Image (tube, rainbow, N blue to C red; front, side, top):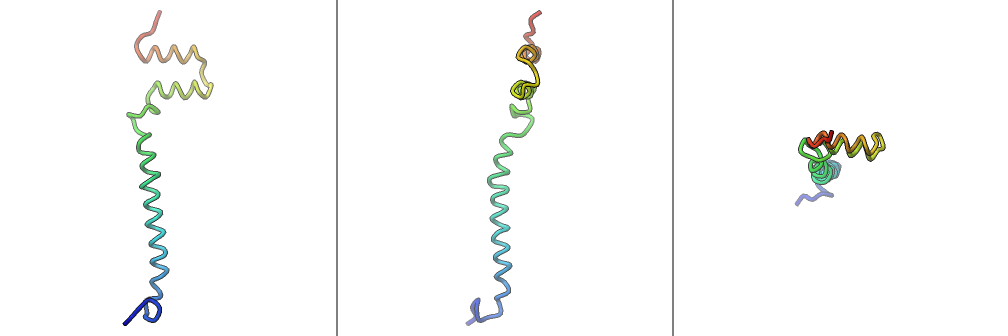
Length: 81
């Protein structure tokens, strides 16, 4: 009977080891990282909407509160004159 230690299959251990870590890496990449990114990216997400971009710019202090409110009102179509 042939087993791993006395047969001629000792050279398969490195292949099994590498294959195991490749499978673990793919599960991590597409199971956790890919799924998380998929939920937050896309044209439908708030991060890519015009108001979302304005909110990010306001949070980074690139625009003032007045500029933010004026631009949001323009986007919503309720600009006061």
